[in-house]
Picture 1: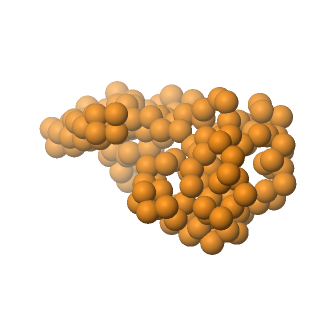
Picture 2: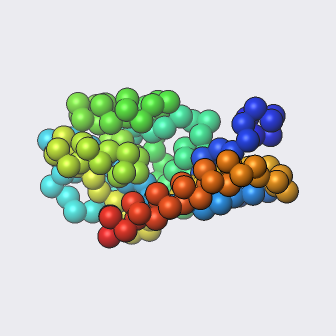
Length: 167
């Protein structure tokens, strides 16, 4: 949408291929396993790579950058997930994980309410975190309008305040 001129500024993940975009960083997150408190993994502090191959994973859209990051991460860890469900909705991922269909992989902030309520449990992916960087992107070299600069500044301020609250 940015490249087609349909959107002036987009909140998105930084990718290594978006060289034609300028990127104003907002915050980083990392992906984690989320699952029902009744799931056997809820008794584990850390999930071992060999446990993953026997589990149904609930993942975000196969066409997404997040899906590609996950597959690259698993490949580097020597894990080959064979059984996964691909969905286009974070809400659907959380709901399937809550009902015990499988293990979702999302950022904890996406499931903050469910984690606080105890309807989902969260565990790190492994010893190495899978981090993503979120920011405001726009076409490289494009002069931003005052409203766009203000919007990006407000987003950065809110992200900073949320980071302070989480600390």
